[in-house]
Length: 405
Image (spheres, rainbow, N blue to C red):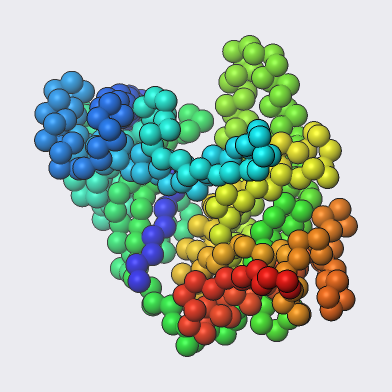
């Protein structure tokens, strides 16, 4: 099995001419991306690489002075962005209420819901390995620009671990953040395929807001990863953001942009630390079982108004991505199971009843057998059971509501 990581390395620029070449190349690349994006939007979202190359390749080279490989990379970049947006829209269905019956419905969205082309605002450029960038024996990076190749020094702690011969470099992305230059390098490595027969631990993970994660393993042990401090910090970000938005000045908008970047970096750090902790806690040959959260809302009416809107969700998809690649490096695996009834089912007697869960007290109390426990723990227990069923051979295990139960 092939796994992929992104190496983020800072670039040491020796003179201003190199910085100017980078800026010029990225700006032309950005404008070219917007040109292709508008074409795709106006042509029924045709994302066939060969057809777009035939129609746009020469125009991109003439209009934006791009080199051959960069012109093709522009098309790939835009196609990838549209596919990402398509996936995101499918994961976040449109929710609406019938005014006559009061029933809530969900409608899966696709690219036709877009009102305008995807706009590339941030200058950046995708570089193909060897054609546009390469790692030299001297330890420097050679990067192609519209003015020719330049050599820069990478600054990245731990970069040497990717030079042991087991990693293969691929696409790199050149970008600028807070006045500093970075190169994000894609690296792939062949790892051993996950074998169900070697599983030592099956861990159910219930994700939420009060606890970012609650884990339950095959030994009956539970671990809670508190999210209260994180909720309070997000509330502070929301309050500061609202204050800056109310001002509306240029300086306030600049600070809003910095604030957004700071918050995103903080969220990524939290998810990195949590996923790393989980992988280290359970070790190799572990199956981590997550519930599929597509269309699931975390809106909390029991929270103060100041906290409600900001705490409807967390970057759970990012957490899943981080956990997946860290698990693969540790000969473990992550699978998704249906979230249906995982918070309503009693793990002892199997009865499914929505009213058994008390959101206010964060408690689950089964009226059939009397079992009582924390509601997040109940979810993790049921998810772990589905993981056990997956190991036993069921490809898509899920709970079904039994009539008159």
